[in-house]
Length: 255
Image 1 (cartoon, rainbow, N blue to C red):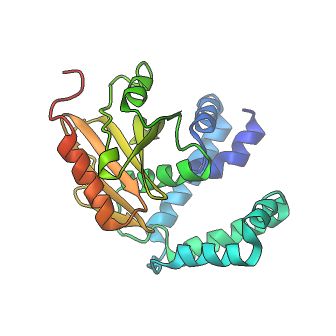
Image 2: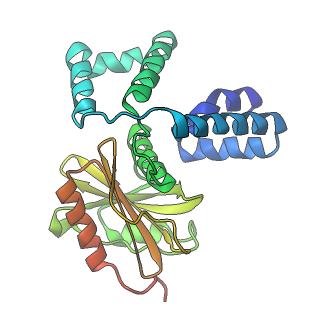
């Protein structure tokens, strides 16, 4: 990736909107380019200032659903995709999106743990950039071995098909500054991202969080951290987390 491409994608990178391969390319370039590194640090500082000092307003829970419905009704899914092909129009939509974000407060929850915000961003990005899974399978004996050699640990993969939360696959992701396993489950038309990585002290949220309609639950068991994210209904989401907690071995995998 060259200098101009990095500068063009820098904002999307800092907002957590790029897939893993592009993030790696940007980081490799920035490591050897002082100008880009200084630009990244300056923009990151600006983002931090906005997050800390911008006013926050809680959006109604139905806002996203209503906006999506209005867009579909006005133009249809096919037309919306065609709009994406016109850079000048997309730029205008991007400006409008920024205004909506500032108005309704994406960072509306004071004291929101960074790992919660990052986990939600990873979940949303996995759905938007068509990178939900690196390995697609309903078989835990296919998903679990896929991580071998890709991580320095072996995540437990629980099959909850009989409980109504079928396993659909897995992928590699980045969370809390390290590579993690993301195990994907389905529930009707919704997906659940379950991030798993070795526990190393503190860092997980001590209580459930909801950010823009996305629920987040974290816990530690058997020397591993678990962080689940989904827009699924709150009760169903809590039922899923309870099932995983009950069926996870108390011993760290490999011990």
